[in-house]
Amino acid sequence: MIDAQSWLVLWKLASRNVARNRRRTALTTLAVGLGVWTSVALAAFARGISGEMADNAIYDLTGHVQVHHPDYPQDPVVSNSIPDSSAKIMQALPPGVVLGSAARVRVPAVVRSEKKATGVTLVGIDPDAEHGLSFIGDGVISGRPIEGPDDQGIVIGQKLAEHLQTALGRRVVVMSQDVNGKLAERGFRITGIFDAELEATEKAFIFCGRGTAQQLLGLGAQISEISIVGQNRDGADAIVNAVQAAVPEAAVRSWRKAAPFADALLRVQNAFLKFWFLIVVIAVSFGLINTIFMSIFERAREFGLIQSLGMRPHNVIVQVALEAFLVLLGGMVIGNCGAWLTVRALSGGVDLSRFARGMEMMGVSRVVYPTILARDIITANLFVLVLCLLGSLYPAWKASRLPILEALHRTH
Image 1 (cartoon, rainbow, N blue to C red):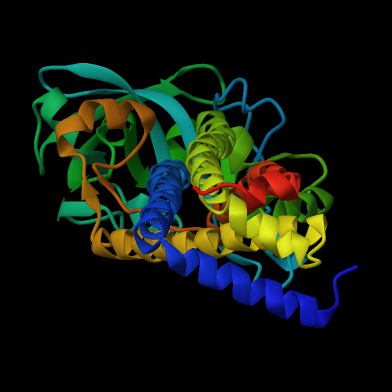
Image 2: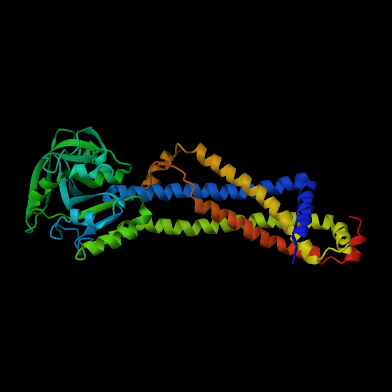
């Protein structure tokens, strides 16, 4: 057992020994700092990419929680519709848990212009419910948005307009299947063209008023889905449980099941970052252990002297471990500050336009915003501190086992 007075003495010895060879200490501290900096900065960049992808998936009409007919996720046809239970669901949720909900008609369709036709998803919306919940609430760049559930116009994506070789103000024909299994067909005038983060989104969806879509498909008051957006994506599971209790006959799922690719990337990323932290820490620990060994061999006579004066071997181990701790502490401060400054410098976003095609396939925007999470900082620093301290115990043990007489007769 080491008393408080001994701890004070060991701390003074350790701090003086660290300051003795300033060049070596500085290089080792910088190496530790570089390891922490790369770990935290890479984690921030990776979190930015995965966060963008998850947020894009949620903002592209997915929401944090979806409510459907039990058969709709596997077969999204018009017959798999449900009553609009939005009011019932919102009453079942505690105040402040969700930002809002939107009831939609969402069915496969074909849109045909004068020159081309292509498959799309027809989405009937109530525009007042979409603000802040999906990209369509804010995404129109020319013309006008859908103005109400009974709006007779249609809004399409910019890339889809280019593909169909059509433009604002022109007419297109939308075809789908109604509730009786017959062809439902109607002409629409393009009243707006929307812009989205992902080109695939611009090609995939067309929008009209929800009442207009219900009339076209013969749905009456039925809808295809209810999308719910909470305060953040981490609270989706709690909302799922509350909504499922309110509408037990419906299929309720979180964004993780609705967007499995984004969820899988987040899980893989968490494992990769821990693996990366481990690789960096192992590299840093080898450098630290080498530095400690050099220090021990240079100070063998000193260790022999202090042990001959009565210092116990376990105190020698503590002293060397304290020296390693001081170096690690300095390195972690430098690394964390460097990572914070890096992320702050990139707070305006990292433009990845030259990799736009590859990023698009992953569902990531052209601009990525690095994000530092507290758990990444804690994990990286704990890895460095714990593993490097454990690594320093071996040279510390070797120092405590030096034969006193042999150490006293060393000249170097």
